[in-house]
Each structure stands twice: as C-alpha cells, then as structure tokens.
Length: 236
Image 1 (cartoon, rainbow, N blue to C red):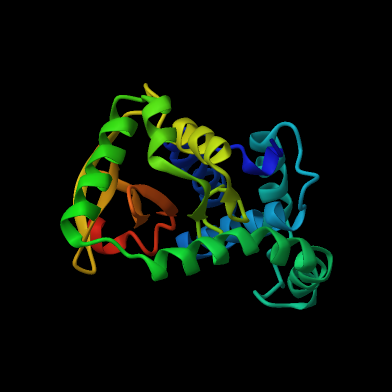
Image 2: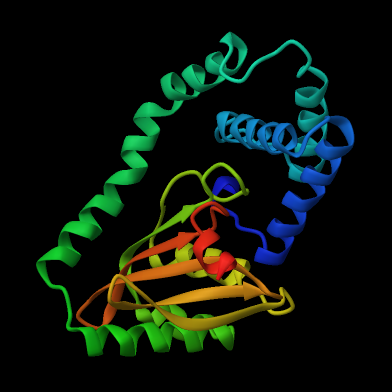
C-alpha cells in the first residue's frame, strides 16, 4: 500500500491541525494569516506527491515554520506559491487521471442500479455498525471489490489526495481513520434525502460519510473532512 493511501486516526488528524494552527498563531500577527499559512503548508504536502517524508508531523512543522518566516512582504498567490501548484499539476496530472478512473467506473455502475431509500438506509446502518464495532471483516463484506473511497480534506487536513480503490485498501483506510481509541462517535444523519453518517470527536463533527450503494454492496464512499464543508453541522 502506498504511504499516500495510509490514513491516521481522525483524532490524530484533528490534533495535528490544531498543533499547526497553534504554531502559526505564535509566529504570525493574525488568525487569518495563520489559517492561510497552514493551508499553504498542506498544499506543499500534497505537492510532494508519492515521495512524502517518513515523519509527516516533523515535515509539516518545519515546512510551516518556513512558510511563516516567508510571510512578510509576500502575498497569497505570488509566483512562489503558484509555481508549486503548477509543478504539481504537470508532475501528477497523468497519475491523477489514472487513479480517478476506478472512481468514475464505480460511479457509472452506481447510477445504473441505484437502490431504494430503505435498502440504502439498511446498508448505511450496517456500515455504521461495522465501523463502530471496528469489525473490519464485516466492513469488507459490505464493500464491492472495486469500491472507491474519496477523502475530501480540502487541503486543510491530511488525507489521501487521490481516490483509494479496492475493498482491501478502503477497509484498511476507514479502519485506521475510525480506529478504537480515536474518540470517534458515529451517528446516522441525512444528506440530500438519503441516509448518511456523521463522525463526532467530542462536540465537533469531524467527518461526514456518504455512501453509494448498488444491490447489497457499497460502490463509493465519500468522506468529507474539510472543516469548511462541515461548518453547517458544527454551527448547529
């Protein structure tokens, strides 16, 4: 399994982001600049591609320090930052297209055989129970062999930058994200009229999970960890 596909427990990811924000706030004059510096740090993390460091926390902290020190006289969107995005696009375009193809195939199959709302809710509930009990064998049994999982961190939290494909990899990633002891509580919710799941760590909604179901198997898993997209839950 590529290290890019390895997911940390959700509580660790939240704590990692909190530590980076605290560090940035100590180095920069405003909370807004601190947020921007952390966002830039994660952008640089994704730009590294498959050659990410063995110690992500140390790399992120050191990179954030460099980003913060370079802030005076530097505006967001200058040539330095855009160069990093351009390099990523040129270096990873073909790989991104190749990695995204299983997700597109799975989505086409889902659209051709969407199940009714009640059957969908039953599968979501079984998925929730498997995650809550950390029964990875049951979780794997609920997934199609070519299932695809998309982790949407929005560049604001460290998640796989490309879709993760295959029941074995997806099971391992979700099992790691919701590992026992991570303090995660999984509850049913409704997204766009269909059953889904939310993951809470303490009082904070840390993730929202939406499933595409074909027959009795999950063919797509959409995991939203982007704090901006979770704002409606947390404001409520």
